[in-house]
Image (cartoon, rainbow, N blue to C red; front, side, top):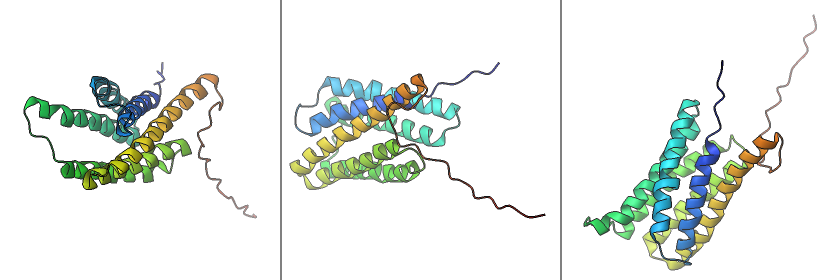
Length: 197
């Protein structure tokens, strides 16, 4: 008897999307960072994505394993960077945080290239996330509040795109048809030649 494995991606996308929106509501200047954002970063954005990455590994999904595990650990390290200075460890200077965010932007840029083989909705998530990391890096390198605010609004869009992609997969699967379009990639048609005998 075969056991069908559930698609873990919507869970990871929801953890990523909701946490990203909440953090970027802060980045856009609406609220100060607080325990709610940190808790979401540890549990829904962090641990849930690591779990989803492990589930993708079980399914033989290299892209999903790399993406969800990496971004889950990103959230955990980000929370650590925010909390550890309150535990007596020296805080990272803004310019060094810029390098941290820049490296995540480079990684995400490569993941965006990989996402071009997938539906448009996934491309939007990774494309907007790449832009977000580069904007946040630019904010920390320059100290510009304006760039930080722009990054906040762009991050809200990025998180919303992840939530849409997650819910589209859930709803489309439940109804057995496309309710929320995701821009499915069509399989290439292979031209065949008839060979005369």
